[in-house]
Image 1 (cartoon, helix red, strand yellow):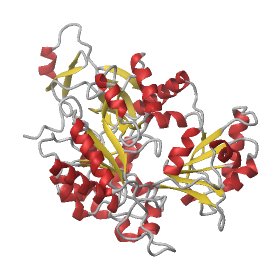
Image 2: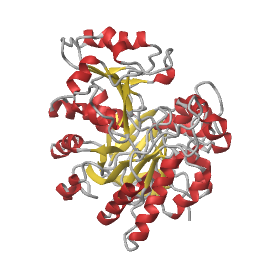
Image 3: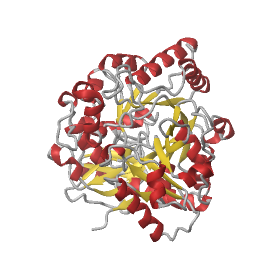
Image 4: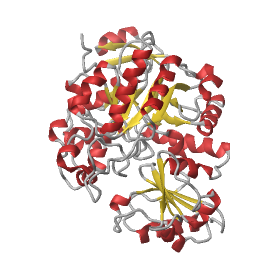
Length: 520
């Protein structure tokens, strides 16, 4: 029988929910030392769980120059110069920036090394696209990274070139960006830990008490493990190890696999199967709209490699999360997991997760249900890049971006995320996006895929807990579950759906302890 939506009162003890019911009945269970807390008309919910983000990457952005909202190369350069002046960056020191989006620049394209050289010729500069899938270096940065005319394009990536030459123009895409940009020196471990603490505080301010580290390599693990050993984590952090490059982390850290140690655990593996739809690198079965009538994006790995990855997950009895934006990538994941299951019929259900699932087609949804695969939708794309998707895919395909209502009809477990640092970890803004599906230019994108506020809330509570195999501890208010709670200034189930993004988090509570409180 389905649990009632509302309870009049709740009793918490030692970080655990003990009872829910009528206020008078629960007062009878309380003793003289019980602290009574009146919500004063506000709304108590289970705390939100973040089904996919990158907390260490987000932490790193807190010390970077921010380029969100820049509308031209001139404004981008001005932001970089202001950052250099404000932080007293000396000649020869790196300047790293995050958050530009070529789709919203007046020039209608990515900057290149010549643009960056014009503003900062004596500092190595790296600017990262808002999607995190691509970026641009200036000449000094290319030199320090060892990227030149003889540097080949890596598999699954692209080094931009000056037309008619092999000379790099500064643009790096997918694996060319992630692999080569990683050569930049990073801050000290203590500085990184402080940045993670600051990032964690931002998640808490949005009512989130379970956070994901969605692509863990040695560097990310070193920071998180240090945080756990020093007991500095306030949230639960679930780490997913880069299966292509860092799978040894699982065997090296058995105590963390599947079990929290001071709020940190390894939840499984992560793989990338394609790129970004707004960056036109997502792998599609039908071409993008544009100059090249045959361009469909491209895969990261071969089908055989993906089957091997999934067999590794099944063999290790660990969940696998796969980044799939385009429908061709989604099909590769479905086919590979089906093949891996057939080859390992006695393996347990690892509840695989299709991350983003942006262009997932309705005809693919039954396969997800049959494989018990969660679709974790980046549904905020409907607002933030909906107009870009209309240009890239046309109204029919763009209208099916993040097909949540179709997933509900098919009985597919679904969750929502922000892929932070791509967007801030604002769950209430994401709920607004899922319920209203309105682009920045005011277009309703796929009205038939709109959902109710209750269906949206389930995506970041009970369904997210199921995704994490934590449905018995989190995701709903029930006796025996953790007292991971959020207090909102109003009820999202009775508020005007158009005002969902205006709701504010007043308090966030982790295992009975207040870990965030909004200051008036």
